[in-house]
Image (cartoon, rainbow, N blue to C red):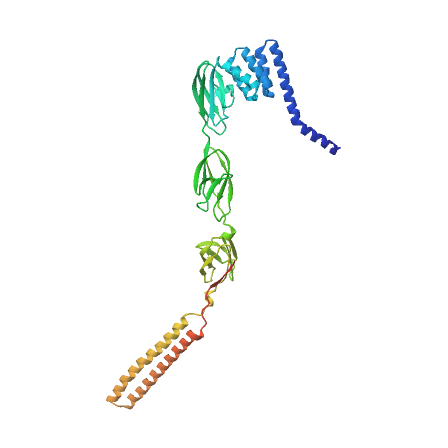
Length: 418
């Protein structure tokens, strides 16, 4: 049962619009027939109301023509003229239109006419009082009474425009109203600087980032492009009284950028690129600008490593680092202890040798066993000190230059995959 009701429901829904149109047409026909009956009864004002109601429900040039003729019969020439203008917008070129133009020219001799054109066209037109409703859309000729009248034009997204005109019976006065478009300010600032900005579907450039311009109110698709970068499209909704700000950031094309990968023996080490922190290792960084860039790797209790690396467009650069712990190095003071001790021993031996020469002079002046023993002791001490100093110096030099392995330093190995 439920499935059997579904097709019926669909049919009802599909028929609703056509039923609504049929109801409007039926009501319009009824209003027209009532108007015709009232016209026969010479109740012309009531007949016009019915004709206008029919026209609003289902616009029809024949109904409009009845309205024109009825107003003319009531000697309401201005209303007849204005409805005749509506009639001319509804009939194509041919005998009917020719008759309508002839009728308009005849009515024009009995009314004052204001020929209103607007820039842009299509604005609604009002004369004197807006609450009485629009008299049509520009360009349009409006019949008015002789004298001064305020003609006003209104159009969406435009400022109103108005003018006071002096209308003369049997003459046509032309009025041109310019409606300034509502505008808002668009600001585009982002990266890269100098990128081209234009409206989608238009070749002409609006400007280069950063820049600002005024645009009519509405929604626009803004295209931002730059050589070597991916094009970006943004939607800008321009509103009155406020700035619309876009901040695009174009990405470099893959063939124009480099990829950086950093790995090593100290996970969590900070990686710095050109003085800015890029992240923690292990790290893979996309979209690196080509060129020479300074890389630094820092980790707590480790000696940092840094170098200048050349990044090539479209290539992947990999850095394998090894940061050393400074405590693993030999104490550098041992070298200076060895050289200092050897130098001190040599100096001591030299001083002792000078003392022995003085003792020998004493012995030459006054020979004695005691002086000779002292001389032998001093010479022996000087020889021992000199020999010891020489041995220490030689041993230190050999250890420093030949036997000692160099202290480990933090290092990085750079490889490029093209």
